[in-house]
Length: 80
Image (cartoon, rainbow, N blue to C red; front, top):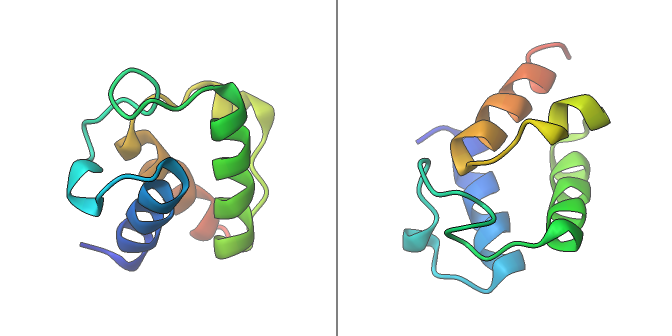
């Protein structure tokens, strides 16, 4: 597991009050993990701070799964 995946998984679990083992790449943030739109905005802000990136609205609109978040963060951190 990469550093991005490890930190992202830990932040999702903490924010959503889940066990880290429940946060797997294929899980849907909304349907499986119970996030609502406010949770997602707050999670996005936590991830932006953690990885020192700024997501666009267009990019976050396409995020559905934990794996989508990994890919988005990797996209932004590879530009640094």
